[in-house]
Image (cartoon, rainbow, N blue to C red; front, side):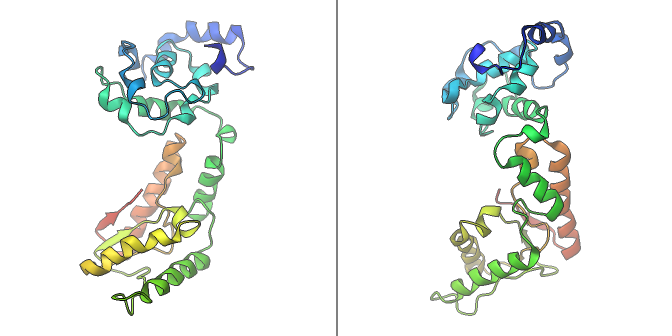
Length: 241
């Protein structure tokens, strides 16, 4: 157990966690039902990375060792793929448990670019902090490349088209490092004769509020997409992320 504990976690804090164990029985993820069968560990695609084992993380929560779980890197290794939950014979909601643990981490200590990304998204509507004019320019530039291909002559990207049948969100990487991947969906839409559009505002399709365990940020980002659907009078949403 010692290898996953932060150097700042003291013996006194560990003992306090044990005393406060009952406080965490209210968590609605069934972690106390774990029978340590390790089927979750066998299905986990990242088990073993830095000693990560979903079974051990569940046991930390079950034993009330919440501070240790929060201080550990383990919750951030998890991909939230949900394979563990699918095979768990006790129906323990392990991805939800991981999100709850992530949500207890101080926001300034959320690892990697996730915290900065959600801050940018709340401020600008996307994880990159990309200005509206730059976003529109990138979309139109990619659309011009599509229009040069045989069978797609005259293709344009419909931006802010009111009353379209379908609104699609955009993963931030598609206007950053993977612009070629935008073309695949667009070509399908074109071939199918789909009436679709992209919002020029709050277009972010990757909700890092979800991945960081920040429920308030997650709701804000989701609500903004709903607002765009109302603004453009669109009933159907395709959310690739």
